[in-house]
Length: 361
Image 1 (cartoon, rainbow, N blue to C red):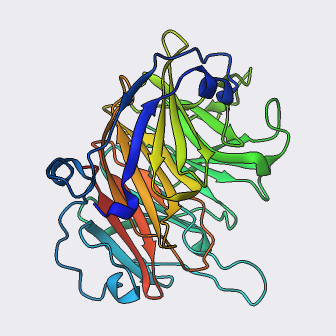
Image 2: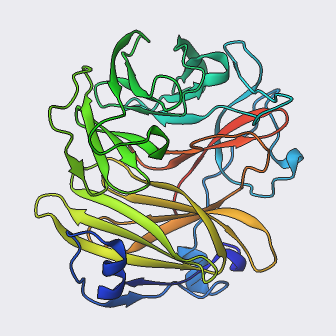
């Protein structure tokens, strides 16, 4: 792993950072500290993050290296050129207004990747072999985010016109709609993501609490209860994260034990980088936590810094360095966690979009 992006140290926080969270569930964790191996040392060569080997590129696929990328190693799942055919994805560069690419992506329990291709008014589903299986029409031109429930239901966030989470079955038929406005959400623009926990559908309010909207059948919630973070893939935790000091490269990940409603850990992550924005906080079915932040090295180079944490105490177990999307297209989500582990990253170029898998190592 490049010295410029090495984690300078990792520490479980004392009460001071628990107070920053501002949640009644947080309680003082025990103070404990671990240190990453010094970059360049023998230990670092074993423990440093590194992506998976890269297979031969597909014929006609966009070449990330040709577009200036320098990060070799990820596994390429599939690529799609810009356009409106089944094997393409939409891009819009209007004379006035923001340019757009595919807004979001999600992965289902079968390992299929679904891409929210709102420019073409559809969701495109790709099989585990990387080939496009089907385009599901949505007619939601301003859709921004999407997730897949365990039962296969697609939940699509539409904050602009419908102001709702629109539900589709696995065949693409609309089966319901859950309004965003109501108790807990006064402004649809404040919704920063949608999440499904079992059959319950939640909207995240300003990167904080999640508000229950209803269930995957389309039935609105009688009481719009709130939970204090994103539910983990193993059903054990509620997760939250934030940047403590951007210039100092300090961020944190916090976990609340769902059964006890007590703080399990709050762990500080330190990077030799200026932190710009958090891009990912999620977990796989085993509960492994994936945290990604975009940062800038002291020399000004940008990268996406992925860190994985085990769920019992939040100790780091690996990471990876991913390239940054530099084109002007507006998107909502470029990263998604696979159930079996690993992260899918959408990397755009002038030729199209390549979807790559990274593992924390």
